[in-house]
Length: 333
Ligand SMILES: [Zn+2]
Image (cartoon, rainbow, N blue to C red; front, side, top):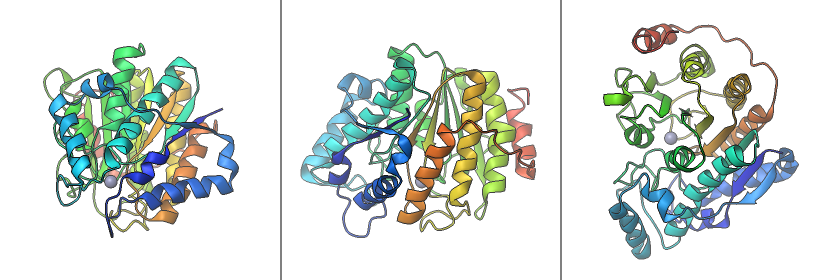
């Protein structure tokens, strides 16, 4: 039975009036799933991340900064306020992602979802930003590599924003293949096609920018014709999805035009890759700010990840050819 990680502390991270990254997001996701009997998934409480798990990605000064900022309810920047409950929420958001990979690699479960907040993919090693305090998906990937026997982890980030934090954390690493499909130019300004990683990790960052207005055809084409063929050659032991839903056409923050069903299509592609490689796949919640679109898209993703159907073939978009020219220097496509 696939596993869904949650925790009530996600509701205690108060970002203040009018902030799009708000507790209602989690309430909407859970209410939608409750109405559908949780799609048959098992619910589990997310534990706190341990200090050791966090310190594998973030310096101690960053942990101290998040704890102290939360205690006084201060803000890291205009986008990234905290409240008294933020520290506890952040610990459980990272801890839920770690528990997810433990379930996948330790218990042999095929699929799971960690749906907590704050999100994580903008958090750099020593910097909270873009609504994110700790790099939840990165912390989980590092935990899988350090403690759970994984040698290689593939992270697909389909949030509409570039996952600059995850990308920075693994920029020089070949243990993690990081692929991000994101609107560009857009916040946070990073993630051009030419950023392929550095040092030992050159070729292991796949930045796949798309223009505003891009929809399912473009996202699915880049996944099917660029990211997934590279991941197939990379042969990961674990697949993680940084699952943000702000590329939905109803999203008030992003400028793309994905439909709810588009996330099911993307998830089915990832599921098919996981089945082919015989490895598990876990999704970690990132953005998504229209409550209805978010709730529907999380459910669509869960269905796609648990499903065994062949994903539909996707026509090759022009952007896949452009990306293949760069990525093809490192990987046979
Ligand atoms: Zn986002």
